Length: 285
Image (tube, rainbow, N blue to C red; front, side, top):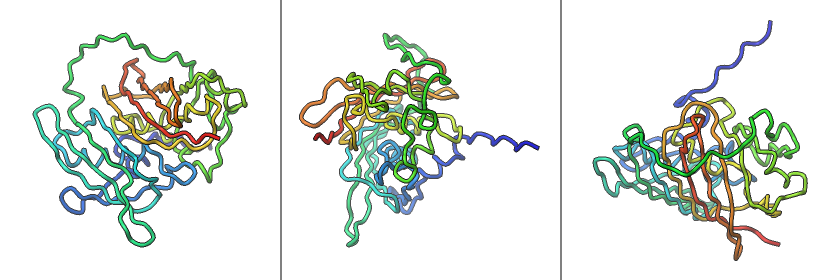
């Protein structure tokens, strides 16, 4: 008999939820364990980190949904125990603002701050329905015509070096994967269908991961190697509809060893559900 199909994971009961969980230790202090499953070459993914801090802030603040989250990455996080400290800055009727930092300890037991966040939270379901926009969803081919690590020609990642790839459903637009064939376009573009591999639908916290989960646009500029994030700001605009989202990322300017990445995330209902801007360092030469 054929094996029964595995039911998709659901929001609140998935690997992403378990791996971003925080445990209150004291008011404004949370323990967490950064999973090695969300790393690239040993470093914890910046979007995953943002979701961990975002979950702690959702527990601290009276509002549950991130509206805007701005993070400065101070040092590279590693898998293992960490402590998140949160502080309420201001609470209002429709928005509340808080800050959070994540720290780990070095070999000598000294505290090292990894990331610091300032964020405003609200209720996405309470927003008015009126939309006036000139933004349009990215023109990405159907998922069946896009390519993931398992499909080629995008190179299959070394599972020991990029375990995050096993936790993502990523299908790249063929027009943005010339870098995988040694033919980068030079346009600085990356587009893809995005979801979690276990079928969990997107929610506001997973959107914080989505904006930082695609291959760096530096690859499309002909630059290989790690592109560490310096600062990342995410705006969550709407609660996403069920189904995979489409992510479009562009870079217009690389100068002085830094580039910006502007991302848009669109849901299955053709709504712009998140935007971000990131400043990242590029290792040239």
